[in-house]
Image (cartoon, rainbow, N blue to C red; front, side, top):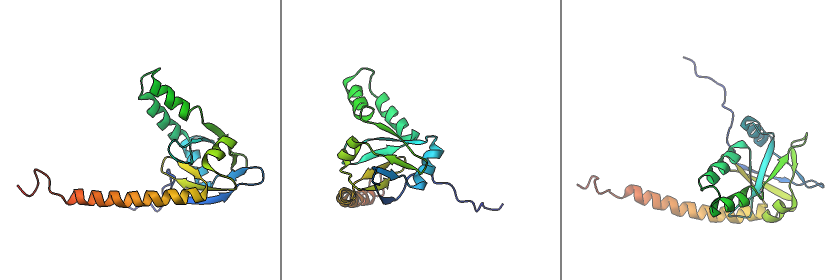
Length: 168
């Protein structure tokens, strides 16, 4: 049996890149993003202000499916369901890509993320985020510090004997 030399297509968003807004406020969606969105079956971009950071969450059908799954966990007509729906659907924008693969970010999204002239695209698996580059650097520094602390915690948990471990 011969192994295939074909490289699998990326179905996740990984890495990051910074691009400029043009004079009309448009930004090009990087080609790898467009390819993932195309395989996801969506020719545009779902965007909403991230709930817990100054960024824009963006993606295709996979992101919308995740949002629907989260909202469906709450009882119909419950306060929590209404709040999540308002926060996620009520602030969302469906952006269409033009022939050159660009989108125009609306003003509420840009204000939330502090985006003026440059956009940092950060791939996060099933979705990606759009950041003002300086804000992302501060966020990344905090995230890195937290991850290092968590790694140390996980290492110490793995090293600790369990109640039914080797010490019995």
